Image (cartoon, helix red, strand yellow):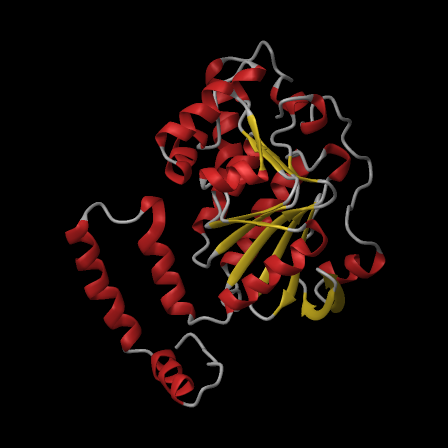
Length: 313
């Protein structure tokens, strides 16, 4: 959903190709055989998941890093039914894979995600409110399922992130934007209330004042303003954008996984309720990590001036 037709999936026909990936090699990879793929200019061998994905790619660009690519560029990566089903399957796959230590989400082509397909949203003008509520709740829960991953998640906003597409980025732990990307929640300009937890996630990320501005005006901001608002953490050059984000993800994946998961949990939904709650949590969580083999490895590596090799034990 966007500020203008070029930023939305409105009115675009559903692509007819039944399997939208990178061709025969990628189809073999999705059958679970070892295949070589390229992500951000680098090839890596990986064992692909045993799930069939449409309008979505799941790749393993480096050890511990999973890359989810929204792959419906003809509709500027609008959230089609098939993409939604693939998203749920992919998140389920990642949630059960203990080798995953960081997840990156990005879009194929010029957009990150133009949001919900407005032709789908407006397809039942005579439907009851109860029916629409049930339908939208399932849609919200499907896409927000990324929040249940225990590992750090990074939204690589390569282009327009509009409406529900912005909410998807907000559901990730970290957001980086390519220079030239545009971000916004123009729900009111389409005659609808915000959805997919936009009225919760946006204030949580940018604060109440900025969230009111963006939600009530429906304006779309460029990457530089998004950085000033705190909507994204960094703005990177487009030419090396995915390379740079994947490099950061690899650094995250190289940290101690138990400590990383507990830190993510501590920061969830704005962090602790108060100072005392923080102290109580840390007095439990830090000793958990002190009792791990990873702590001993981290200390040894620091003394030996080498990179640690964490095993999650």
